Structures are given as structure tokens and as C-alpha cells.
Image 1 (tube, rainbow, N blue to C red):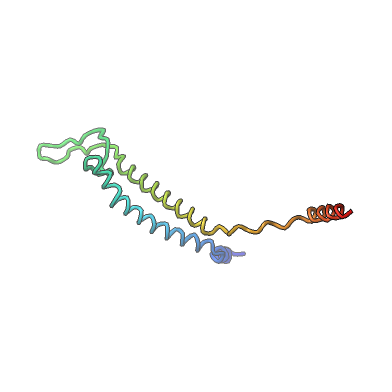
Image 2 (image 1 turned 90 degrees about the vertical axis):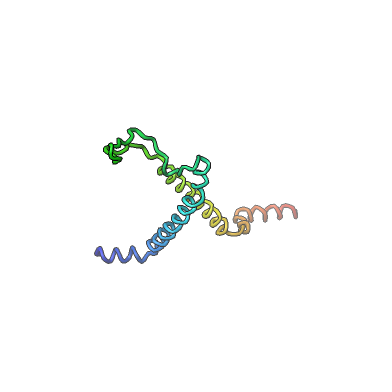
Length: 136
């Protein structure tokens, strides 16, 4: 079997198409949650922290050196943990919303309670024996 025919068989299985749809929807969903975090949640957090944007939070290791003409001679060296924190919040919100969505989806897909299984042949035989003994 050639590589091309194997590839055609792989594509035709349908799992690849499902995966591609999931990736596209996931990317679009990620943009929605990022817009929610950037546009609503982080401005509220920034207002609570004195008007500073979370993405601007940093720890300066070495401040910039400014020359007499006002230009930076040496750039600032800083650990910019605010952008990382904002990305972590994005991730956690995306994970929470996906979890809630999948939980609702699985609840909706759950089949109705099935009828109890029929008794086994042994149980039926034992019942027949019991009923026969009652008649005697």
C-alpha cells in the first residue's frame, strides 16, 4: 500500500475532519474568551489595583539609564510577570468554560435510564423450581 493511498484512507476515516473542526472552533472560542478577559475582567482588576493594567506589571531588575539628551542609553531589564499572569487567567477561563460546556453536553447526551436487564437464564430456572416446589 502506497503512502498516498494510506493518506487517503487516513483522511477518509472522518477523525481528521472532526479534529479540524474542533481546532477551528477552539481557536474562535479562544478569541471570544480573550476578548472577555482583555475587555471586561482585566480592566476591573486594573481598577482595583490603582489603574495599572495587569499586563504592565513587572519587577525591574536594572532600571534604564537615561542620557542627558533624554534617550535611553541602556534598556531596562525587568521580569514582566503581568503578561504571563494575564495569559494564565485567559487559560483558566477558557478551561472553565470548556469544562462547563462539556459537562452540559454530556448531560444532554446521556441516554435515558434503560429498562432493567432481563433476568439470566439461571434465575428463570430457579424461579421455575421455586414455583414448582410451592405447588407440592
